[in-house]
Length: 145
Image (spheres, rainbow, N blue to C red):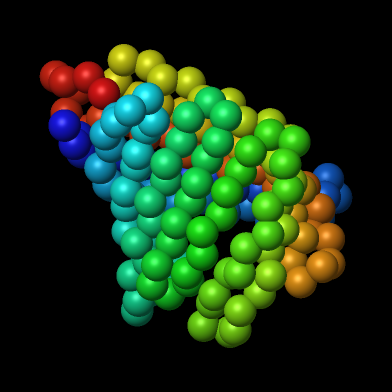
């Protein structure tokens, strides 16, 4: 059964001296199926005029993020594994390489927290380390995730 959730996403990209922080809050839906958790939301922060539909499929070993709209991509994160993917933006298509160092997934009664730490390359140029944290909390506290 799908549940409405409040989603907070925080991201840090870059090195210790010069890093870029991104934070976004939105609403979306959550459900569990076959031992995996799914979160769907619409991201307007990437381009205020064009929606980007984002789907996150996750378990403790693998995270898959699919985006379609202002940006389009399918990024996969698995500990110790590198993945290449095209990342389509209004400015062109970039080749993204991620090498995942750590995935932490914590499911609580009315919330879920996901943290992914990885190394990022864009068009074969290192962008340093990156990390994102996704926290989904049920909007109606009378029910549990």
